[in-house]
Length: 169
Image (tube, rainbow, N blue to C red; front, side, top):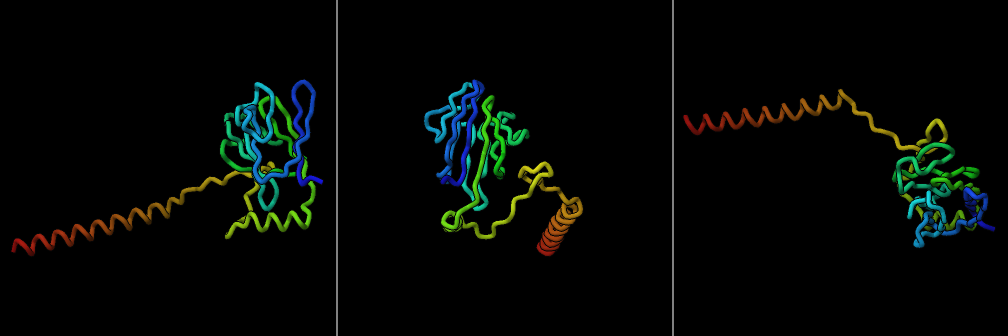
């Protein structure tokens, strides 16, 4: 029994299921991919899936809205968590991701193969997708750092001025 399955459906209506057993899977039109998607709307190397402690993560390698996860465009290079029942769109090709509960053997293998010291839960977008959080600049902190640097520079200038006066007089 497979841990996860990806079923591709081409625009002509044909579908092909793929058991996901490897820790890393690439999808694309090129022959070097793990899963070859024979359609001109799919890029040579379109996306990859990586096994994590919580299941598979998806990462778009093309950008420009060519990959959709549950109807939302993925940001190129960012990783998103796949949930069982997630739909993926690669160009004009649809894919359905289905995952079964981790078996005890798989849990042990994942825990041994993928430990992440200091790991943390990925933030979830209100729409249910994992998205990166943008850092907000703290204006007060920026101003405090700027003032500290200016104070240090002023102190250095005072010391230099005093040492020049001592040498002259």
